[in-house]
Length: 104
Length: 74
Length: 198
Image (cartoon, rainbow over all chains, first blue to last red; front, side, top):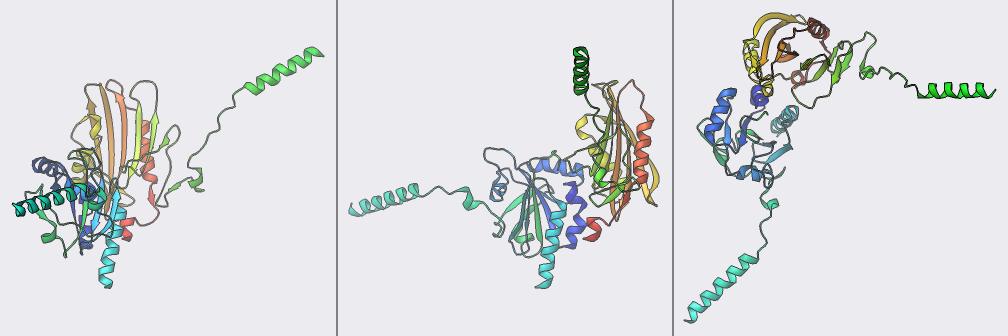
């Protein structure tokens, strides 16, 4: 999450916002987020349906796996990657999305 | 009597039709690149309600980072 | 004649059985330039610390490159030095970054750190910050001395780490810190970073 916090100004440059998503309850996420001084929201999804939609809930596993998804401004999923976030990849994708919008 | 029997038959037909329908595969609900994002909302660590359609759709690109749990490194 | 032949056979066998000394292999030889510096990922150049420091293969994103040195005199007896392109924390201000950094540094080691001692410095002619700190693992009776140099690549903060682990009653070896300082002094960026080119 610190990596995202580090890149917020770059996300802003490409008209992007970031959220974290886990199955923790809101209170736990608030304590954790405050401790890390994160300024972007972390979504609480105890039921896990959001993770299920995006393929981040492995079968018979209680927690989400690490996964990054980018949804463009038109609501279309443009990027998915399992594992820890690849910030270079994320920023390159955002740059591309932004360039597409400028062109059109 | 005849009418209630017809209704019962209709009920049975519907019941079996539903029961025999293939179970929704995870693939049906699983989203992938190129598909439209679902409508979703959730409570946030900031004490607010995140509503994708109201706050992000048509306005910003959105990066979602799924992670196992708070207090795990990411 | 037979005796001579036997002697020759024994000598031949002994020669064949003698273990040849393992050749000293420089794992970074292919990346080393004429002046002795290593160019890593076409991103930065530096002088490697002398043997017995050895390159560490790391999967973690925390380090971009790291070297370790171990000894067997006591346990723990290990030093590590590393360059991190994305050190813990997120602030561009050095003092804030140091505070954020030490929340996470060696977080899984159960070490309780003293308050870091901060000192302004320079790196490649630009302002930097040196943080020194000592931590103790009281249950195992271990201690660790750490030095972190927060520097800048473009606008972003990068970091150099050094740690030396010792049993609590054993003094630290200053030689390892000198190797770290030499590594930092030699470190140069070969090209603008990904973020500078974005």
